[in-house]
Image (cartoon, rainbow, N blue to C red):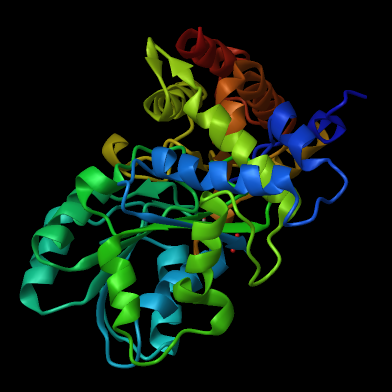
Length: 400
Ligand SMILES: *Cc1c(COP(=O)(O)O)cnc(C)c1O
């Protein structure tokens, strides 16, 4: 077995994802205390690196707390919204529906602008029109919807909101670190994620970067959020760590914070086509997604997103070909490559999802191994409508 034994089984679901050897090593240390110098240094450094990965302004505030993507969503909701706050939700699927439900529970007055059909996105112009039709405090959108592989035009939505003095919040759980996002340039207010997706870490952290405008909106709330989610509760802790001091409110996930600093360092050291840094990391995801899409096309498989312009670079939602069903996912698992079934209500049984985000996009061999397993599984299921090796060959062209 390799030193990274878990990776003998290749995890290609849309999170959690396979992690790099350096991340695994940083994580696999006897649990350090939250005030030990190496944790203080890693925590401070990780906060600084978050601004770079998020392309966020020097005056923005990063938060890292123990939790999940759902907890990060809840943190954004409860710090910006209270009973009666008017918000617009851009609905592109499963996780937008979750966001809307959280907003309702918090008492928000909610309008939803939804994708016209399964696999479609919501155009930024449509969001702008909705923002013009009524006054809103904030707009909430899912950067990449993990249930469909549909991406929204985050730049268009953020700019439309900023131009109208409306706060914009993006659920980047399946995107941050994998899809281009320029928080400062676009004027986006909150960009949130969790550790186990495109940042390439084990699950367990909720992360976000918050603009000064959004922090001011929290300060103006008349009802405080739950204490464990309150930005103002965590703010002195984040500031203390960034100043390379320790502070305590609630115990940080120390092993994960050590690994986070390493992971963000890897993201910022990415290289692709002569580019370096986070732009190169985004480009690596573009390249991986292109390779996978070329392979699916060569195998005669079609995707759930209806047009290339809104296909995510972090995962692919692929329709089962005629005569094939969810048994395909099981047969791939028998080849030790794990992909996920469909997640969209009413469509689960019609497609599967392959994650290509985080460290795996830097490893062409792993992408090719996934496609080999797919071809094997298709053939074993009796699917004859493709030429063996065509998918792998098409991807190899893109990855070389
Ligand atoms: C995975 C995901 C979530 C939920 O994250 P958890 O860590 O499972 O709570 C939320 N939003 C999006 C877009 C996701 O992909």
